Image (cartoon, rainbow, N blue to C red; front, top):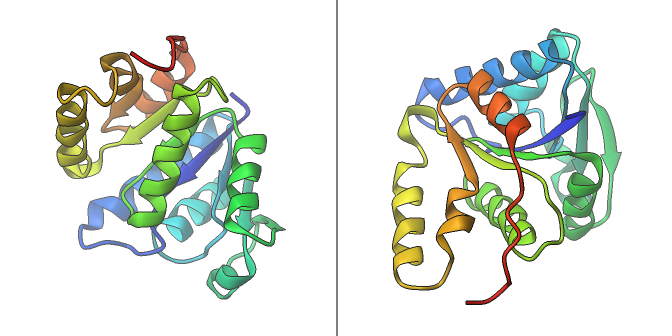
Length: 186
C-alpha cells in the first residue's frame, strides 16, 4: 500500500489513549513508508496523527474544504483545497489504497460507512479498518451484528471490516485484505 486514508476526530476526545494511538499510527505508517491522506486539520486526533507522521518523515496529504480551512495549522502537510465535502471524499478515494478509522464523531462515522458501502457495492476493493482504541468501536461492532441479524447486511460485509487495537497489526491486516465479491442483494 502506498497511502492510507485515515478518518478521525477533529477533537481529542476524553481518553488520552486516543491521541496516543493517533500519534503511534502516524509514526508507524511513516516508518513503513506508507503515506497518509486525511481531512487536513491541525487539531484533535487529526492534528496528532499528522504531526507525528510529519515528525517521523512521512508523507501526509490533507484534503480540506473552505468551511474547515480555519482548522489548518501545521507544517509538513501537503494541503489540497477542494470546494465540497463530496469532492473531499472523492480525493480520499483517489489518493488512498485503504481506509482506517480512529475514534471520532459523525464525520468520521459517515466517512467510514461510505468506504464500507463502496466496498459492498463494488465501487472499490480497498480494505477498511478500525483502530479500536480502548474499545471505542465495541458498541458499534455490536450494533453492526444486530443489523446483520435483522437481515439488512450480510455477515461477509461486517466481517470484511478489519478490527485491531494496535496500529502495526492493523496495517499488517490491511495488507492481507482480499475483497469479497457477492451479489448486492440477498
